[in-house]
Length: 326
Image (cartoon, rainbow, N blue to C red):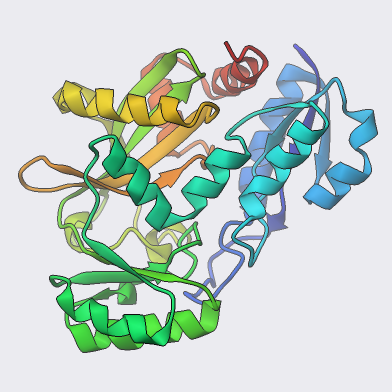
């Protein structure tokens, strides 16, 4: 049993009415919050919940000997994911998840791509739109294209309409998103293929879990290979998702590259490396996500379950791992 766990999360009823312009898509749905709170209550003598970093900071002096688990997202700031680890590090408090550096790098999709390439991991051809004059560069990319905010996650700014098949449409969408989000936009080549996530869990010296989870849709109406894994699927749940572990079929050299990438962050604890496997079995990383979804239907839990852990045991491992960093 842990003595006391500090649980930080913002709250929203659900995302059923979400649109591409919704800014709170990373907020914690009540059902997810209740699942996590329930399991934390089973493994700790006390669980204290705060809805914001501000509230954590106001009470920080009472938590010097506690451990922090955050699924808080915030809104409209490229730095928001770094707030909780920064507070914890400033007060020398143990916490689950990525440190400030890792959080900042992974929040920036373009910078994440540079890290991937450094370790030999493929990324789609892409450009960054930071000003009006950058828009014409889009015409040099091969179609089809995906247009999305560079600093957002949780499908914020990303619906099926973000997959475009002509350059003029891509330019118009990039311009509109740039004006709406008032920050850089990434435009990248769409990779047709299987939607996969590599789950890596461990510390600075050891990988404890490394699995590849394949996502499929429980429908014949759509093939995930041809569409975006966007808000319609992630948030509105218009199709049931099926997660399966396919690690045994993955090139071991790719796993080694991803492990080196994981270790380069020093403290990530657990990271989800999302991407596409094309028809030639070439993996392309789309996004690095250390701020992972820990729900019962998540690819994270699928990886833990495949390794023989219950939902409760997954959280025990996550917390214990952060206490024993070496």
